Every structure is written in structure tokens, then in C-alpha cells.
Image (cartoon, rainbow, N blue to C red; front, side, top):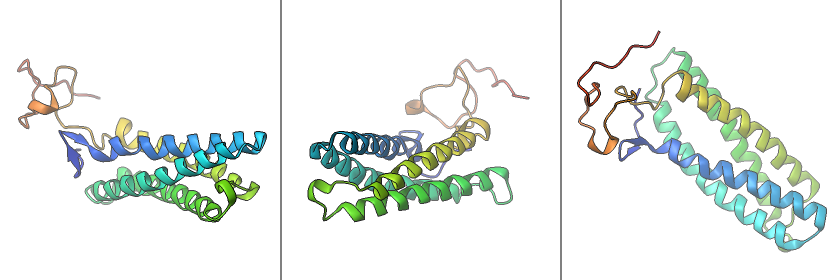
Length: 173
């Protein structure tokens, strides 16, 4: 099932999610280093990583929600997508809280509470990523109907579900 928000033949949501995920994990690592070393530079970098992650998460959430609305109601994919979105929303809220309590701090240093929220959010993000993988890899959400080992480039896609060789695509059990 193809997604609603696409660029050059590919789902935009799947392109965007790597940024907040990577930025949030990296920000948390920098905050851990700060808490161990008491070096304010690490706290500052962690803060700005999380800042960028929040922006990326909002963009990913908007495209993900648009795609989720196109999943047929009453399907397992719709339920899995709801869990995926809820977990990612929780991740965004937890990182936003951590960010807000640090805005006025010297060097934007996290306290133990802010760091704890980040660790919980990273764990929830891992679970959310698993559900996202379930949507794509198991349920075929965001996968072009003509996907197969001999499919033509998405840049040259004519909308055909037949591979470039002209043979019908193989069915899967």
C-alpha cells in the first residue's frame, strides 16, 4: 500500500524518521557524557541535538499521520499504526519536557530528572521503531504495489505493477 506523502516515488515519513531518532539518541548520549564529566559543552550539544530532534519529530509526525489516515479502518495495520503513533507522540512529549526544563539553565545542562525522561523516551522510541518496521516490513505499508527484485526505478515509475522484464511479479504466500 502506497503512502499519501511521497517524494520522488518514496514515502516521506520513512525518510524523515531517521533524523529525530538519531538526534534524540545522540542528544541523550551527549547528556550522559555531560553528567559523567561535568563538561558543559556536552550538555550544550545535547540540548541542540534534542532541539533539532523535536523539529524533525514534528515533521515526521505530520507526514506519518497523513499516511495513517489512508490505512483502511478495521485492519491490523491501522491498529499497529495507532500504537506506533502514540509511542512516538510520547517520545516527542518527553523530549519536549526535557528541553523545556533546560531552556533557562546555564549551558542548557540537564538535571537527573530531564535525563531520566530522555532515557525513557529513547526506550519508547525503540519500541515505536519496531512497530514502524512491522508496518512496513510485515504489513506492507509504504511499499509500492509493484515492488519486486526486478522493479524499475521509482524515478521512471509508470505506475505499472509489472517488473521491467515483463514477467508478472511473484506472489507471496
